[in-house]
Image (cartoon, helix red, strand yellow):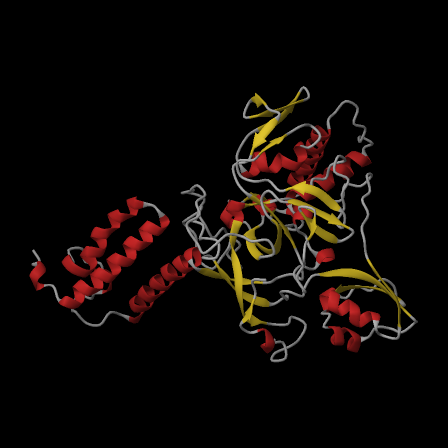
Length: 477
C-alpha cells in the first residue's frame, strides 16, 4: 500500500496540473459524468496501483523494443490529434473554385472550432484526419455506434453575416458512392423527371406537386439502385461524417434573403459584398484572341477560363476590380454580366417547385428559418421545408388526401427546432451552394477558416506551384 507522504512533490504538481485541466475541460463540455475519470488521473500520478505501462516492460527489465516505443508514441499522437480536431482546429484544403478569388483552389486552411464553439462528436469512434472513407481501401473511417445527439459547447462567438464558414454538406446525408456529385437527391430527381418524360407520364391531373416530386424521386432512386456499376452503393452518412464544404454565409436565421439581377439584398437592403466576389461576364473583342498573357494579367486560373466560341465572344469570371480593368482595354468592345432569368417551365433552383419561380441570379425573397419560429405550411410551400422537417429535425412527413401529416397528425404550421443559414460561393456563377440544395442547419456548422498555412497552384509544377504570397493570409472574410 503506497503512503501518500512518500509521493514526490513533482508527482503532486503534475497531478494538480492534470486534474485542473481535466476539471476545466469537463466544466467546458458540461458532462459531469466524466469526472469519474479523476480517480484514474490520481492513480496515474499518485497511487500507481494499476500498472498502466506494464505492456511496455520486459521480463528482464531491459529497455523496451523499439516497436513498443513507436506504438506508444503513435497512440499518444492519435489521441492528441483526435482531441485537437474535435475541440480546437482542423486542416481543410480548398478543392474547387467556388470561392475564387477569396480562397483559391489548393489553399490549405486552419479551421477554428473555437470560433463558433466546438461541436461534440456525433460519431465519437472515428479515425482522426479522415472525414468518412479511408483512401485506397475505401472503407468507412468511423463506427456508426455509439451515436450521440447534437451538442455545441461554448466558443468565441456565433456565425456572422459575411463569414466564410466550413460546414458538413447537408444534402450529403445520402450518397451514391460512385457519383458523389451532384447531390443524390438532385440525381434521383433529374433521373425521375427524365423517365417520366420519356414515358409520357408528366400529366399531373389531381396529383399535388409534392406527390409529383415524390414520384420522380422514387423512380430515380429505383433506377440508381438497379445500376450499381454506374452509381455504386447508396450510403447514409451521419451529420459529422458528411463531406466538408466551405462557403460564405450570406443570410442568418430570421433574415429575408433575395437576389435581384445578381445583387444580394438582406431585409430589403443591398448587401455589401466582399471584394473577391465574381460573376461571369460575356465579353466581345474586336477580333483579338484572348491569350495566356491576358489571363495571367488578370490572374484568371485555368479552371476559370470559359471560352464561349472561338472568338471574338468569351465568357469569363471577373471581380469588380477585374471588370474595370477589362473595360479599359482598347480591344474590348462590350462587356455584359450573365444573368439567368426565371423560367416557369424549368425548375432551376431549390426548392425546385413551380410555386417558386426563381433562378440562380433572381432568387427569393426567402425568410431563413430560425429556431422557435413558426411558419404556415401548405401544399404550395411544403417542398421548401420538406428536408428540414424530415431529414434535419427527424420527423415523419406524409401527404394524404390533400393534407400534410407530420408525425401522424395533420399540420398546417411547423415550429423550427434549429437555426438555419444560407451559404453561397463567391464565384457566384460557378458554385453549387444553397441556391441548389437549400439551408445549412446549425448542427452542420464545423468552424471558421482563420489562416492559409499552405497554398499550391495545381496548374504549375514544383517549386513554381508554391504561392508564397498567400502564406499566413487571414482566411475568415
